[in-house]
Image (cartoon, rainbow, N blue to C red):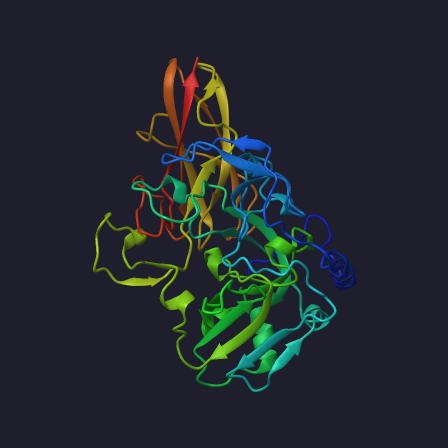
Length: 412
């Protein structure tokens, strides 16, 4: 496991329990949100304006995608402020609108059952008593950047802000499973949270990992992020952390772990979050008949964060360009920038390595000699040698976008 210590001390078990007892009471997300500020995203298919909201508890100004269930997007300028995304600006994505407005830390229990030697009902104190681990990892929605898909596809029209990077503190899922005793013949581990369907016939949100993946020592049950307890909207009191995999597997308000002796065939594994079994999950619009598999490992991405599209820079001047990159399911090998629309590329200087699953900052200087319109581009190569593509992917679910990002600028 790639472990990192906090730059500030992580909370002790006593501090976590004290904070949990306070913050777990009375935090409720509004059924609607006050929106007084408009945000104009450059989404090709619109909307031309999306509201910013400050109505959600423990959250600062967020782009409002949906109120029920809450879908809150991180404004992109936040990613220029540091390698770790502040908890109060970390994106929010739920599947069902029935979410507890409070969780009683004292009575909360994490159940472990199924194909195990003994059923467990763990209190928060029991979880906190297990060996503590820390990991920096990107949490990214499968549909991050769906709003840029052309032709457009249905679903939440996210910009690039359905992602965030945090230092996660918790315990290994393996240690919890070993305490229960996984029986021979176990195949998968299924996780459930406290959210519920809005109608009786709705499929409860459940996500499943192969047993070897669940026990690899990297998958975590987190109780803190960035040195503070989990916000309610980001999964208090416990959430699964599956580093390198899309956030559909990062079950929030985790309260139930079931070990299965056969493959999981319920809706959220067999019908939802499927991708074409093709390179890059890419197919042509209208194409049918291809095999599908559950979405899994993330792919490399990189972004310019200090220059907005349409920014003005001075001709001939050395212009600082900086941003973030991540390797997806592995680390960042290199980040390159282009000042001529992708004709030539130059390496950037990489910032501190916070771990293979984390954002990594980069920077470079470019000089654009001629006045007029220019396009800056950035691409990431991960440590497996996978490079961002120059052509956008397309699939009917709007998943796994990772095309090389372009930022138009005006040289004066």
